[in-house]
Length: 285
Ligand code: GLP
Image (cartoon, rainbow, N blue to C red; front, top):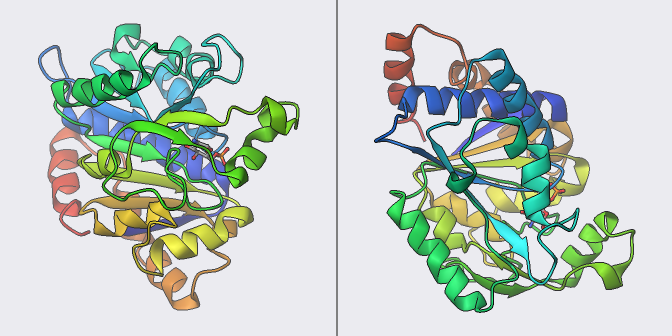
């Protein structure tokens, strides 16, 4: 695992966006070789999306040959509801970039057969050649996508009933009215994310500090589903200072001491150098 500790949420957003750009450029996607990206919603990744839009406008990144798969979607919320994850992704990212809308996959929480919808989603990921980089955020209870505490760590895309803590956390998007928050969702499984070639998790804010501690300093546990990535060969965790509050001083010191290595992952180099550098660095998990 790599833990990259940055000053604040803005630095996390910028670093994450630079990393995504670096990975896509190194991959050199084209008509016969699409880059597949797993994407999250939530307030945490918003800054990263803004930066990627900025990079796109500057002409340093294109999403023409990128396919995306979103982590989750509410069940029963109309697609055009402002808080649906379809609306979120369209408004905050897709409408500002050059992705072909057909390549942006989001689970349909209004499908007549939700089980089939989940199976098709898994199949679509497989047909796309699997996910190269899966980006995620976490809930304060350490859930990844909507894999609530107690979810199987080998789970696949499926219907989940939301935990009360998640309903309370998400009420802020629904006029703080618990009754308006959907109680069910479709979500990729922990196993679905584990299958990605690389996992990038963004964790910011003091309210996520205990979850970060559980994610990386204690054992793999289905009550903190993000901890499963301890078993992933290529897990990169980005956090801000506030989120490190519950970590051991020696953990923070160790990873901060590696910042010169981590920063090379997002540095601008000549194309030939970039490739060999990222290959070399990817061996240090
Ligand atoms: C929801 C989403 C998760 C997301 C979490 C945290 O539960 N299903 O994918 O990580 O919210 O959201 P935020 O980034 O707003 O804290």
